[in-house]
Amino acid sequence: MENNKVTIVTATEEHYKYAEEICQTIEEAAKIRGTGIAKRDPEYIKSKMREGKAVIALTHDGRFVGFCYIETWGKEKNFVANSGLIVVPEFRELGLGKMIKKAAFELSRKKFPNAKLFGITTSPAVMKINYQLGYRPVTFSQLTDDEAFWKGCESCVNFDILKRTNYKHCLCTAMLYDPQEKKNESEKVDEQKSSISL
Image 1 (tube, helix red, strand yellow):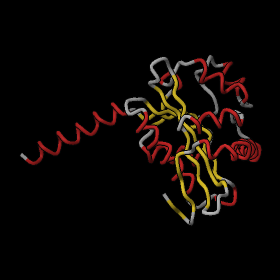
Image 2 (image 1 turned 180 degrees about the vertical axis):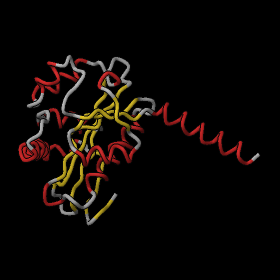
Image 3 (image 1 turned 90 degrees about the vertical axis):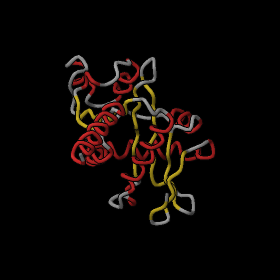
Image 4 (image 1 turned 30 degrees about the horizontal axis):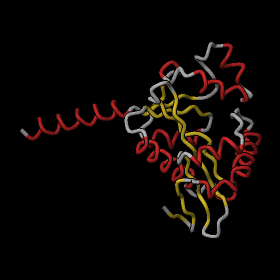
């Protein structure tokens, strides 16, 4: 996938060298926006690369410009989140965030076709991208009950809100893509088409 000489690929061990820069870019973006975001550790980012659960955007000469990873949650791995979406400031406003998120979404669907995809975000841009991919806003109770996921929120500046509301509300918006729901919708449309053609 290319756009303005930028390629988006599934990240591997060869991309370990970008892990520190990815973490710094995520942290700086959170500070500038003044919104909460869970901190990421370079070793964690490397583990996502090693597992084939991340996408990275690079210029033709090897400069890092964007990143996103996927994580599974729940005992049955029936929930998947695309997290850590970031685009380097000078490459923003070019549609790269949408392309990276779409690549992560496609990787998630390929690796975990029956899982529900979800995300929590304070970013209007990410919400818009999610909506275009077929996500819909939901309550927090419709997301994973995996304690490890919610533990990741502890480094966020808004964690006290989440904790005070017993993990039911926060400043983030919860969004969900349910493949079974999409399948049912598609079947309904097909039924309507066939009844119209009779």
